[in-house]
Amino acid sequence: MAGDPVDTPVIVPASEGCFVRQAIDNMGWCDMGDYILVVDALEDAPLESEVVAAIAETVGDKPVGFVLNTHTHYDHVSLNEAFVRRFGAEIVNQRTTTIEPEGRFFQSPGREVRMIPMPGCHTREDCVIWAPNDRVLFVGDIFGWGLIPSGSLLTAELRTLLRDTYQRLIDFDAKIVVPGHGPVCGTAELVRWVEYFDWLLETVAALTAAGKNDDEIRVSVTPPEDMLDWWRFVAWKHADALGKVLTSASRGVLDD
Ligand SMILES: [Zn+2]
Image (cartoon, rainbow, N blue to C red):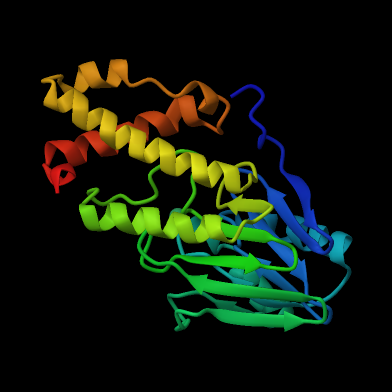
């Protein structure tokens, strides 16, 4: 796609000492003084030397002490093995480790990083990583530039979980929000997604009640004007989200 902002990976300084390698698959790292803490580990193992060089260039030649995976889908864990092999890094994710609901804390002089479980929106393992001094929040695939993060039917229980989880994310009041994929954003996009989600649910319910079929609904529910520039939204994510809502409507779970 012409002009796709992530065609070329870029290193985004999220704060003094925290960086994001922004691409189709995102990862980040924070300088913890004696060591580096990495968040997520990409899909492509051959990127190892490029990533290790980018880390050293931005925060110095220090060992990677921890790799935190927001979840363990294949496109978030490929370099785990490289960080273990090179630095003896500890891998932390909810597949291999129990993380208490209040989170796991990583401290250094001047910086704190918290890994907080927020399961159920995308996978049962979902965690977010919050750096309060930096006001940087890594949300993994809970935010997907318009995607509904779960593949499950949108039951009342799941809808509540999605809204409650998003409210927790919004309440951090992060300056920089790092999704698992695509451009970094801010808290405003999280707020907008919840509005969009509720609008999709209400609009589809109203059109279904008015006797419209799925094809008619697909034609009439067009992407909102202010979201046309969201990453891969018009070409992909809006139709995907609408499809999930239509499937849930046809199974009757939206009436609960
Ligand atoms: Zn994922």
